Length: 114
Image (cartoon, rainbow, N blue to C red; front, side, top):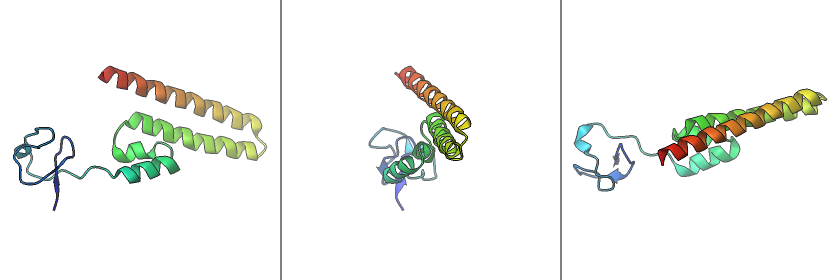
């Protein structure tokens, strides 16, 4: 069974320290979960905007914001197809606002990290 570094996800064998990041592997007796599959994350983001971020457990605010925008956009287009143009446009404006806020929050948090 492969073991992974809990800090960086690097595959480790029988080391006391992770060769990639230097993490002391003796701190935890249990093996860390393997890192998320990049292909699965990409496919999820392609099909359901933001779901790949949620799957990776990274940038969760952005992931949930994008997923909400995706669902609201579908709802807005469906409302427009049902001859409720005003309601559909309002939903799309709300979705666009959520998209802008999600991207602004993500940019702020990313810039804060340095």
